[in-house]
Amino acid sequence: MKSAYTAKRIGADNKDKRDLLIYLFWKTGLVSNREIGTRFGLTYSAVSQRVKMMTSRLSVEKGLRNQYIMLKSQIKV
Picture (cartoon, rainbow, N blue to C red):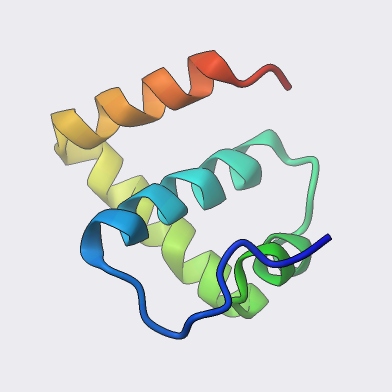
């Protein structure tokens, strides 16, 4: 399977979308940080950083939380 992103830099809007997907995959517990990182072109430690950041942001940003809820409702795990 190919990585979701091959470019080194992405825009802020796309970064939020990527990070929401990373958080969702991490939250399921079905794949390791290393596997998630491989799919998104990140290291496993970068995945941990993205998850930590997203956890903080989801607790305070209602719009982002609503995006996560909508995304989660569309994916069956």
